[in-house]
Every structure is written in structure tokens, then in C-alpha cells.
Image (cartoon, rainbow, N blue to C red; front, side):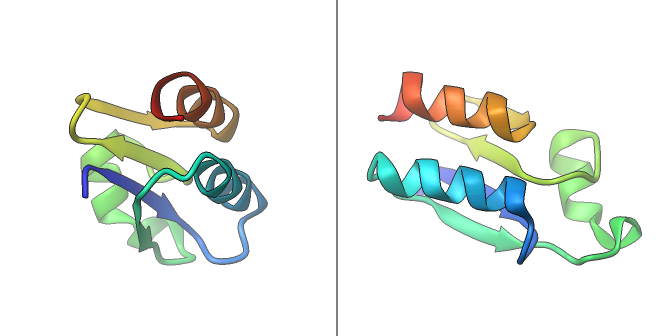
Amino acid sequence: MSVTLYALDGCPYCEKVHDALDDHDVEYDTEWVEALHSERNEVKRISGQRGVPVLVDDEQGVTMAESDKIVEYVERSLA
């Protein structure tokens, strides 16, 4: 799998990205993160920050945060 979404259960911004990925039939893995920002070390290592959602597209070499930007990327590049 080349697309991974780092998300927090119950996060509305993460759900927005999940919905976009599902709507466009994109295959992806979800890595569920800890609720505490201080515990999100893997997200920090990957993206340089601890917020979610974060999308990683290994095939294209893309790592991005911010739900609106991710949805736009999904619609333009992955759909």
C-alpha cells in the first residue's frame, strides 16, 4: 500500500479525508494516532508536526497535512 493516512478516531477533519479517499475508491491504510499530541512521535517524525490528518503517498513522494489540502490532492492526483 502506498497511501497511508494518519488519523485520530473521532476527528472530523480526519473523517473528511477518509470520506474523500473512500468516495474516490483510493486504497489506503490508516494509522490511528494517540489522542495526546505529545504521544504522536511517529506523526512528528513523518511530517514535522503532531497534528492530524496527515497523508503519505509513498509512490509520489508526498507527505501533507491539512484536511482541505489533502482532499484537493486526492481529487486531483489519486481519483
